[in-house]
Image (cartoon, rainbow, N blue to C red; front, side, top):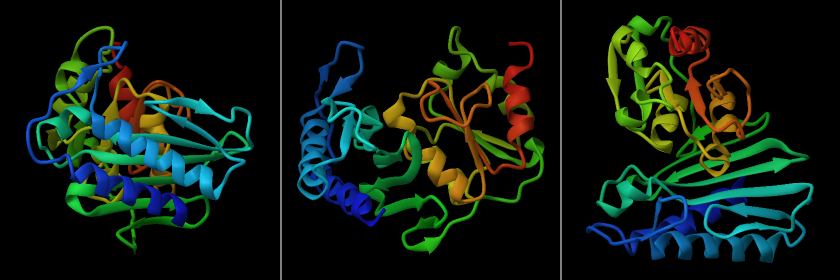
Length: 250
């Protein structure tokens, strides 16, 4: 976990060299943007991992997989929230998850522009800037703050997960999106976060972070996995109600 924190923070400092103005980007084959900062940050993380843990595998958003089949695999998203980053919005993050024998074991979400780091390791709890982090005690959706990355993604087929229903029943609904929404849940500042589309590198640290903070992280069908293509973080108390609301009439 400490090594992952150091990698994320070093990469985060690199991204800050590019942050603050409106940036241009290339389009990848899937239509998503990528900047020079995304690539440079991932290369820095890869170099650090390879130097310290040469037998470990790495899967990254920008440069694919190396050393496949390794018992320990690092999963890296150098800038989660590239569109926010490109506009100078500070809610982007550097994400690192570590799997051991294909099971999530370490998660780090670092937010360079906010100077926040949320990290966790299996059995060691979750920490927010070094302090213990816990989910909220909110007991019903009617009392809850619920989040999603983008309303247009959550409300249109085929990505419709019923977020409009959930938002209509909640006390507050906002789009503090991408990885920051999940970090807000893990630190008790929000109660549920819904991501209808989530790649493995987007989700990799989240299951460990949210679970070790006392909450639950699953895909929209309720599977506790970072490879389900979607993600729902809650304080645990609300999880079944949130999933049922998302699925109702879907």
